[in-house]
Every structure is written in C-alpha cells, then in structure tokens.
Image 1 (cartoon, rainbow, N blue to C red):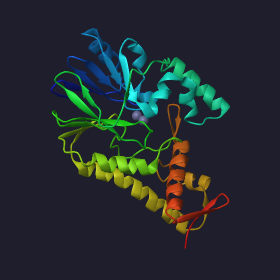
Image 2 (cartoon, rainbow, N blue to C red):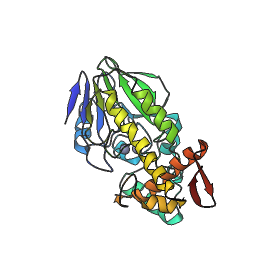
Image 3 (cartoon, protein in one colour):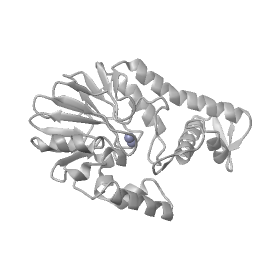
Image 4 (cartoon, helix red, strand yellow):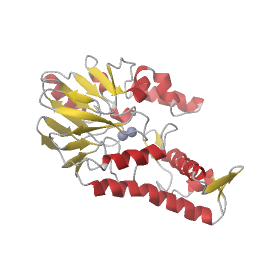
Length: 292
Ligand SMILES: [Zn+2]
Ligand SMILES: [Zn+2]
C-alpha cells in the first residue's frame, strides 16, 4: 500500500536488502531510508534533487541506494555514525570470522556499493528537523542498533517506526550490539505517542496509529521468554540446544546473507543474559538452568 499525506510520501521496497522509504518533498527534499525502489528514488531525485538522506540506523537494507546520491547530506544518529564512515568498523559490529568478514566485505562493496562518506549531521533524541512546511522530531529508539531512530511528524500525525517494523515475527535484537532491555524501553516509549498512522520499514508498511499494535509486537518478547523458560523447566540446556528449538524463527534459514540461525542464537543469548541479571536463570559452565 502506498501512502501520502501533506508533503510526505511513502514508497514500498521489496524484501531484503530493500526496505520502504519515506520521502519529504518540501523546501528541503529528503529521503528517510533510501533502500526501496531504485527507479522511484531516481525519479524523485530527477525533480529538484535530493538534499538530505536520513538513514534510520546502520543496517545495509536501509542504505542500499545511498551511493546513488553522493551530493546529498547524510544524517544519522551519532551512535551508528561510524558504520557509515568506516567499512571495517561496520563489519566488526557483527563479529564475523575471517571468512565471513571477507564475504560481507564483498557483498557490501559489490551489491550495496558501500563507500565511506561524511556524516553531515549526527541526529540526537528530540532534534527537530525542519524541511520547510514539514517538520519531524527525532526519537532515538535504540535496541535494534544503538543508534536506531524513529521519526515523528506531529502535524501530519505520522510516526515512522523504521525497523520497529510490527511484523508478525516480532522485534529483532540479534546483533552483538543490539540490546533487549532497550528494545523494550523503546517500544514502550513509542506506544506513548498519539498519531493516526504508523509507517514501518518492512512488512505491511502502513498501519493505523493504534498503540495496541505495538503492544502486541512487544508481547512477542514476553512470549519468547515464556517459551525459553518452559524449555529450561525441562532441564539445563546449552545455548546451541536452545537455539536449535527455533523459538523465534522456527527452523534455521537464511535471508540473503543473513543467517537467521545465528540471529536466533544471539537473541536467545540476550534473553538468557536478561534472565540471569534478574536472578531467574543461572549458568553452570555452558549450560543454563532455572534458579530454584
Ligand atoms: Zn535493521
Ligand atoms: Zn531493516
């Protein structure tokens, strides 16, 4: 579903490494997440040019086409900024082995056309972005990545949630620098805004601004944790045994270069670490068990 309100338009992208984009056609012309349709983005650029590219966070499926617009300013949150200026740093975030790192480097250079570039503005929480008639407030909503941002358009009553994408699988916090507790805090915060429309970077894209939808998405985290606790009730388990259960993604699969088995493992580990901090789970060597 396409969507437009005021000077804001929404362009759908396909599956990974694409996402949906938000266009702002105002005195300052901006794109948030230039990773949707190459043709549509170039068409927008062919008008009066694109002045600013905003990338909601440092994941390649949100900056796939940034390289097409080298003269535009790049605005990203400070906590994710270095991923745009330093390819090595970006790859290191995922803590890959040597072979995997080489694979990633090839992919980012050949497919994503990654080229280090200057970050012209480091976004901060509550920054007001003025495009002309249209303005947006930056909401720093970390957890997915440290610098993940959502964008609130108060006048148009729109919230672009970016990768808090409301998909049925639930939220993603599977990178080494993702954070489960921050994910929960960010989603709780986003539920507090009164808007008519949520836009997301993946999945359906356009949603009613109903906080109940975010609540259901947030509840996936509790369901995952309940399943994990049920599993541990059966006896101590290693992380590999827990990940093999596929509580989050079911049977291990890949999406492009992403290994969801690895995401499953990383996310389960974040749940175990949270439960250990809460004193509900303990580890004996490489086995995790319920604290009685
Ligand atoms: Zn992402
Ligand atoms: Zn994404």
